[in-house]
Image (tube, rainbow over all chains, first blue to last red; front, top):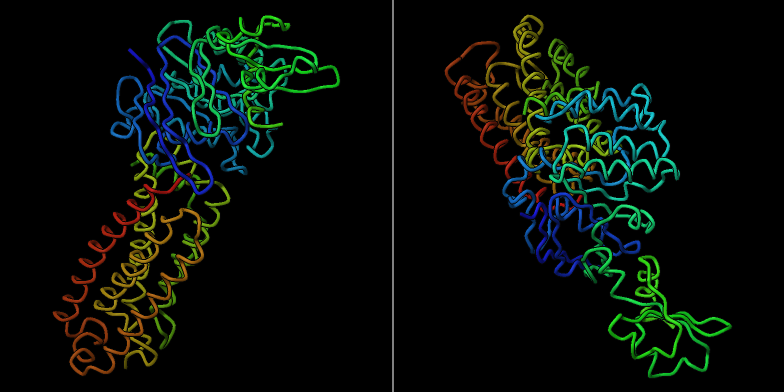
Length: 283
Length: 215
């Protein structure tokens, strides 16, 4: 059974539109949610949580429709939308004291464990935390009632490399029991290489691909060639390309790869796929 | 709801709201427009909502395991509690008022039983304008408070004019102390009923508007 299912989510703003966003996730997996700034990652996450009211579409978590079961589902899912910024003048101890009362499954031992793991001082005020520490505190809050599903907006942004690695390891630990899943957005594609099982890529409010990580990268090839080889016919086949003094490099689908076998081809990674897709309509 | 109220009192209630509770003592000022003593609460409410905005309170609350409408419900409930406390805190001073104004209040309505009926209605008017206006954006506080206060001023202007110019009302509703009690009790009962109904309606309208707000 799917632990998360998003179907045809739509939200129209004056200058931006989420169009038929659909993807799903099974228990026991990590899905990375990528897209450039303003592509609609946070809007999608907020729409899923009813913080932004979608114009159309359905969201189901743990097998239940979200809007109809908001109260019960919020007990079973953990989410963070960036680092903690609310109540900056309050000490973490006070903020936690308020929040913990709301969760039936809140576990003080788990909470204390994460405080130690992340080196968080509960007597500090929220405003005294660095950007990375705010993210860690938000994660701590989201994890302390052992949610089945985690929806995390950029949980690794602002973290130093050591902490980032630690958080990614933590993600693996969380899903180990096969019952829990994580959807997290990120700008750091190496995070996905390290721990994501699935990748969902959103561009201008539309899902470009949502598939297993290896299928995602396996669907494309990087090609390189000289300036003379950069013909109009080839240009039509390229999803995106970059020109430089020596020639060009570009992205083709794996299906198209045999048709350009006169060029140097290499496997594509997530970062290059994103970069070439975003260069799609640019010169 | 208990947890939400705990959150409101622990994080959101502005200290000025507690201080204004003592302003019920203004009912001991000789001849004064006593309705004003109940209006200071609006300053407290404005403080609470402005500070709440700085603290991203709405986003904080909406992130808790509550319904989106509970964000509105908790806020309305806290304000209702303070309005009721503001009224309750003024009652002892109202009882003492006839000693200070033995011949009645020269500057406005006497703070009698009926007066409190009108205070209930005054808060009902504020709630009816303020909550739906504020929760349309969950962000713009000032305009919502100003509109609420303006509506209250129009209402109170009408009340003061009526109880002084309509002879029957002046005799039966503007009596000193507990004189002419049946008429006064009628106004009090009407005030409580209007307050309960209108505040409930204000909550529903505010919650429906807040549901459409993108946080």
